[in-house]
Length: 442
Ligand SMILES: Nc1ncnc2c1ncn2[C@@H]1O[C@H](COP(=O)(O)OP(=O)(O)OP(=O)(O)O)[C@@H](O)[C@H]1O
Image 1: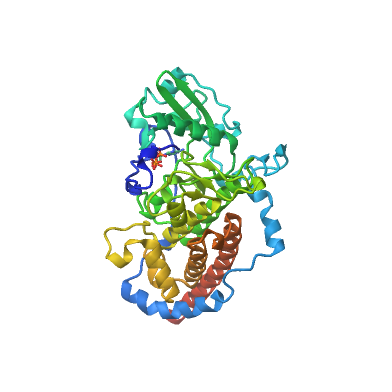
Image 2 (image 1 turned 120 degrees about the horizontal axis):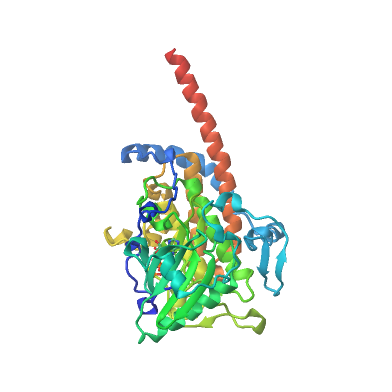
């Protein structure tokens, strides 16, 4: 979605998303989420458990980050990063529209959205249809407000739900027009399961409208803040991190010209009913440097969001894909700590979350920064430490030292695999100990 460039990197508090509960629009939506794994423990219990869990986790941390092998490299050239619809939209070599395989809709699909068959940019609506879909831009259908304009939930005549973004009408702000064109051009070139799908746009007199896939379950930031109820467990957080890594890898590697998102942040990650992630907001996206011509970066005015901005980009104005990797590192820290990148309410040493978290990690105290909404289990703590290790690499001050986004995805796959194995054994030992105590009681 788009935003005003005037906001640049001194941006407003990302928590301010004025998102409404889907059901209040009178449209039927289900958002069944129940998570029993978010039971919170007291701080004292936590400290006592810290040592024990660290020693369990420590045994696994030795296998931390797997080396980048040829095999793993090739694995990532697999279907995961290609178009969600089974079509290879385009790849680095420009091949396109190769419809080969079934979709992954199982985990992402929803019954109410028939736009899923629609091609990116294929929806051509009239202004009258837009008025119909939004009941004349009814305030009751407003789902958010961004720098660029207002977002409405709309229902098309065929029953499809969409998100309709209406640009602010400040004709003097020429840069809004530039943002609009930038987003349109970017959106129409991409299609991936983990990117919010673009359906179409409309320019009519002084109206500029973008129609995109409606993603029903709020933003990641809202979920980390528990605005919608229960907190996300660590398994869900790892899935989300992997979804984002897939989406950004696709932007960096599988589009005609690599695209740098430039605004990866938790409030730009929308969640489906099944808690899978879709990356939104292409208002700042830029084409990456053309590596065939030997260019290594694009020089550009700094844009993005405070707390997520690559310090090297800030210093040099030189933008590369690694700026997205840096922001992704911030996002990883946010996922495991639950904190926002900047936390003015905390004491000075804790205000910049990445600085605080990385120091704790390097000092061997990672466990103390786990989001208090997450349980202290061996699996959670293993994933915490491994994720922080990856974050540390992503946050390297020099971009050459940061991994590629593709590499981030590979590492996260391994983290998720190890996490699942350990979680299963946690569960087995928990059930056998509860059986033992049950038989003692008898
Ligand atoms: N496709 C969508 N599906 C569902 N809700 C959406 C969609 N796009 C946006 N929203 C909602 O509207 C809000 C505003 O989105 P928008 O992208 O315009 O602004 P923002 O990203 O919050 O702000 P900015 O981009 O200016 O930083 C989002 O936080 C989200 O709650």
